[in-house]
Amino acid sequence: MTDDLQLLQMARLGCQLQLNELDERIAHLTGRQPAGAERDPALRKKRTMSAAARKRIADAQRKRWAAARKAPTAMQPSKPAKPAKKGMSAAAKERIRKANQKRWAEYRAKKADAGKRDAKTATATS
Image (tube, rainbow, N blue to C red; front, side, top):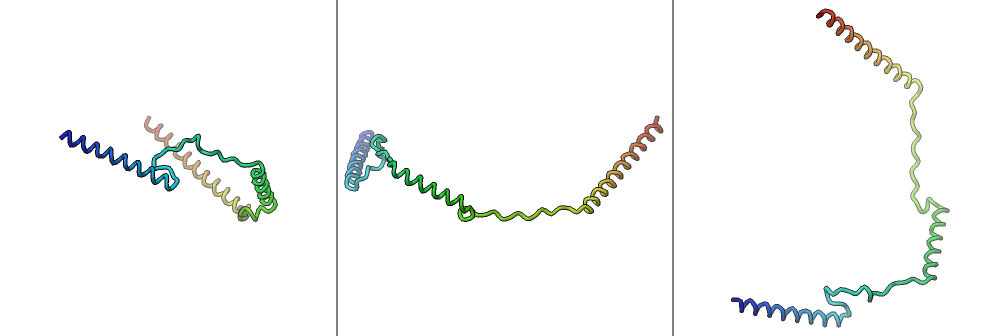
């Protein structure tokens, strides 16, 4: 049984080697690296930009900003105007004030009556 296992493991190893060889040949023909191959970061080319190219880009950006400052409506959507706040009339404020005064007067009167009743019951029981 172990002989069969060793034989199958060796066959598998041989197939993997053949598969790796085929991947390398395909990569060579297509000009790409085989799948799973890691690239060396030192071999990567560093992309640099010439001073003239940087100047062109900077000038174009300045031109865009200048245009945006001159015509803000062309570059940015304008905000809709806020509607004017609707205020309350003096008469309405006075009605509210009087209603609150009346409400508080009733509350205080009710509280005073409750206090008098409590005082009467306390003296009657003692």
